[in-house]
Image (cartoon, rainbow, N blue to C red; front, top):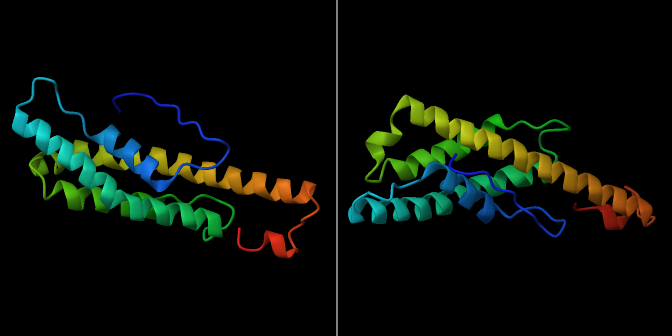
Length: 149
């Protein structure tokens, strides 16, 4: 990972687009001495990764919101989906040979795993805060207002 970032919101969760940008930025770093061709290919790879990751990330976030995994985070299927999306894009890029390396594949799974776990935790905490907020407002779990969250 090239850098550590702190993402701040107004109390909500980060959208899939932001998570896709963070993951792409952690995976694509082009050296300042790279040729113009590689710089352009790297930028194209970053944009393509973001576009391909958004649906996989949205599914992971929805799984947590909907409680598809019960009370515990099951990041494995989401890491697999994100890794598959990354490899699909990478295999069509100038950097396909680089992305086939075992160390790079390990890095992809690590980056996706870290961000997936953080994203799932964020969703769970936001869900819990919403429940607490409803309870304080008198809208307990059996009211119409609490359905659909």
